[in-house]
Length: 157
Image: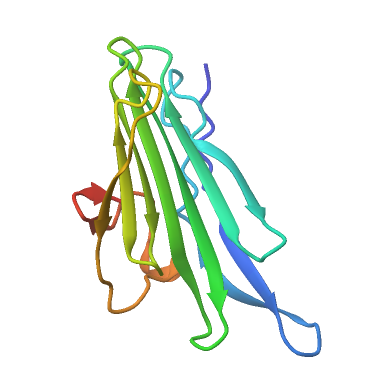
């Protein structure tokens, strides 16, 4: 079995007022690759919504060696005043396939709110626990070198 370990490049181009494209950002470590034959490819897609939100999705699943599965989603938006692409949202979930334990977290950075649901697979109508926080400034895409590199409120984004 051969694992493709080629580097994946995340490149973002923006247009100027004349419609000409300019490279805004390039990173070789944000889009992760499969590490061994038992891993599912962690990159689960990228899209830009009609409202200009950049969504990057990952999934973490192994066919052997663990019961755990997880996924995460990053949401970025271009801030015209700062000329920066800012992290505005983050969603993560993890589950243990054997015990059905798990947790879902959803973070809205501009609003300063995070919700956490514990064991949503065990209980049908789990109420989220809300936590408020304050950021001096939103993180930008170039400040997050790779998924899991930013320690924030007890998790790694």
